[in-house]
Image (cartoon, rainbow, N blue to C red; front, side, top):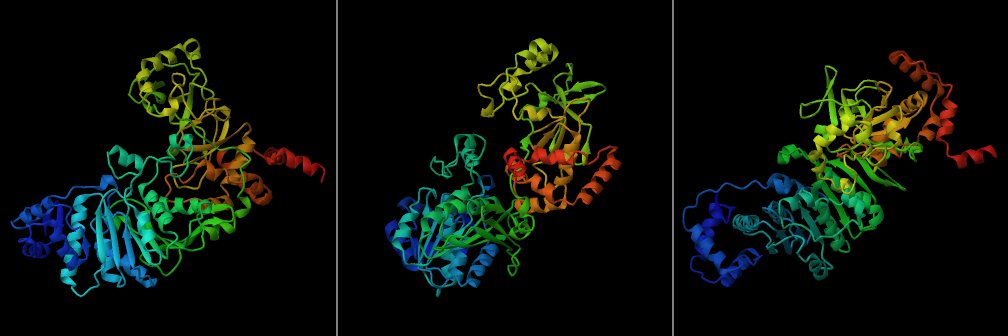
Length: 590
């Protein structure tokens, strides 16, 4: 194997091209010969490419180390996996006439398609990285040199940005043909590619119609593969055929979620999970996304293990107006899917941990810069992170934080007069606050924080980590007669009475709640639990169906374990607290 134009080329292909092209001086003539022999259109773009190729292959060429393009989300599909994918499609009796690979890379999907699909008449491959364009062309030549009797479709490997290629023209040209869209789009977000100064980006457009606030908070940062997949679906949904793309699991979830609204003409939606560590040596959750085009829209997705496709693992998607991760499990707990009577909140956000988060060493506060800090205790509160929420009950914290506001946007000038030591400390480290990158701090008072409100100062809280995948809720008690704060990776509800907090804890840690959450959350999500997920837990419905004996048994266990002396005397008051006023009024006159 040698390198030409930074692309791998076998000696077999190199020798062939050297022999066939050495007397040719016109790239147009060379292109005609390559088309006649291999069906590849526009093999050379100009005479310079022809001359350079001839010079390189006529002499011994040194191996050039291949650049690592993983930072661009470029994980090339190996030939073995590509072949298994093609055979999987063959097993579904799929035999396309038109094949499109929107980001063809080194061409392994194209080669395996030539090998396995006998009815191909046209192949379109698009690739922005020129060395891969050449490698794909060389691989096609190599395939036909070894398989001279194979069907030779017309092939165009186009060097351009996938977002600049006119796919709609293909849809118009081949309205009656059977099409297959196949490939492995980049596993990267638009913001990441932008930071790498990549040109392989879609036009600046809000393709999912997010509001300005959602864009600011990250929902405007979408996966490039998702954009490509949706472009393929929208462009070819009226054509007979199929789509199979290797994308991150989050992309598949998003497409199925939005399908309820979009109603694209796709059906038989499937997710075939692969082992990315084995196939690409990366720790990424990705799968093959398959759907049938030109169909009555469907809004659920069957999950399989790609290496053993005989049995459906589970089905996720929409059940009436609810989006769930496991429809079968969800059916048994759907009665508690509603609206939480208590509003779930995220913990506080300050983006200045080295200054705002403190340890206590020998009675003194120490910040993240290892500085001993002298502060009044008034604005210092115990502080918990996701990693701290391991126990069922917490009454001591390992860290502390400075809480500068009681509500978002509150003026912070009061700190100077009421807490001079704290003000002096914060002012001395003012540059850290100014350097915060998030736009949420723009035009806000100095030392501002977010995720703060009346709920933050409730003495009793029930919380769960948004980052960890443990279906376990924690009761947080006051420390030194002050409420404990949580960071923004945690979600919480606050209570003024310990009884209410313990009742809520028992309900949330029940088997019913666990099964319900398992049926609506996705294990590969960046955050297993979000506010949207937690707000679906109807604690009132759960409280009404719980067995009173089971409730008492669990309360007794907590009393013994944590030296509580709680009873169920306030249970009815707790129920009333969760009951909407209008429902209560109706029941009075029922």
